[in-house]
Image: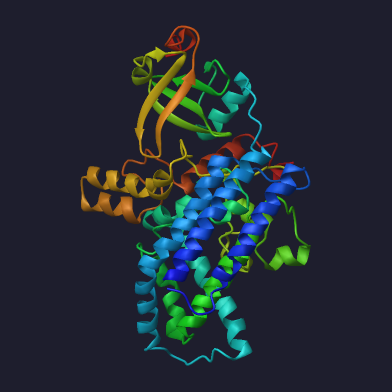
Length: 308
Length: 131
């Protein structure tokens, strides 16, 4: 379900043109960009599929948003400039919460993981969107905005603006933005860290448009020149198959549920951190980071500037 | 709804063109044959803290296997990148090499199989003595 003014639909030609530009400029050595054709196909087809999936669940999400809006605390006018400033911050905070929970709870990670399963980082990766984001309930993170009194259409438009903003930061072509910009906004550098699988960078930089939330809540990690980013997920995919890209974590979760020996185990597999297991035989991000930190303590790394 | 499907069809065509453009550009990562040190490093990134002295290299240099007791740590090519998995050595050692390839069913939804180029005996003797 989309409002009459949909930033994402309007931006589709821009998405296509800039991807073409990034590929052509990289071909002639003008910018840094790596495109593997099969990986590119997966990313772009995930993006196309997500637009269809959005049709199936958009009505439910909109209905919930409108229902909550009936009980709003305030009535915020859509035509006031300050309301747009307010929703920029409010929506971005909601996005931060959604994004962070998407890494901390497997039920939400199952839908989000495919955005990270490419071992490449380019503008096509930005379009590698979830097909199942509407069915795991992650959208409840935006309902408080309705309760506050932001009109549903305004919320949808701001969500679209945020998605369009986040497109351009999926690139290696831009090394760093000016310092003032890096301090406040999410940038290609900050978001490269977010897509990294290096233990140091895991589960960092959740921000959408603004990076201030990560700085406020202790999840910010700058990109370090001494530690190049390795893209992908902790357990990278072993092939290029669209259905496997879209559903692999759901299938994994289903298999785990079937093997669960108690309600507690079942709950852990669904609501625990990704990588949780009853016997601790698998690794969560926290465990991977702890193991890495222990290694750093035992043997100060050449890559750790703090240790130099 | 008609407008949506029109946009969908145009987007689908555009995707085809972008994939073709990416193939034409040849800007994937270069993938020269790995050296044993490079393979060891890549495996170590995913299986940290393990001793990987003995590593078998695939014949084409695009894969490697390290043995850790009764486990085999696999490094195999996925496009211009690599993935790793851990399987039981017994399973791996029972696979037959055919036409210069070892194809191992991993029975994982996210990584159904791993493939290695082999020219010599299978399983490789360097790993058989590594338990």
